[in-house]
View 1 (cartoon, helix red, strand yellow):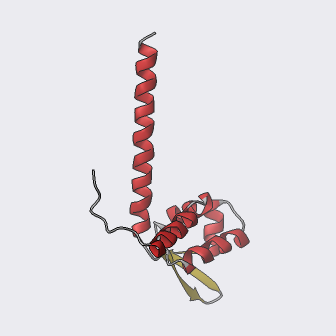
View 2 (view 1 turned 120 degrees about the vertical axis):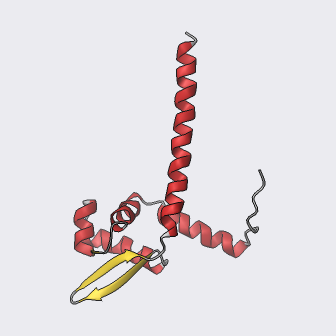
View 3 (view 1 turned 30 degrees about the vertical axis):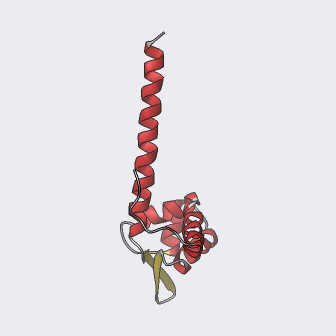
Length: 116
């Protein structure tokens, strides 16, 4: 099946690769999952993902710089929220692909077991 998407330029390939590298870190995916329900401070997020404030700050900064997150200052705290909700569609597409592959592998395994 041919895609109707525009061909990727070399510059776009680099941008897309950076976005995928950004999402290749499990802590960042946990942070996004938490932020899906609303705005949080760095310390709240550190507690939610069971990580240190310094580590979470580093990940949040990278995602914010890439445009995935919004940040705003409230007194002495910085609050983070989702800046690009399309990231959840991307995650869902990947998750559905993983689920489908697992179903196929399970089906093949059960068919093989049934032939014995």
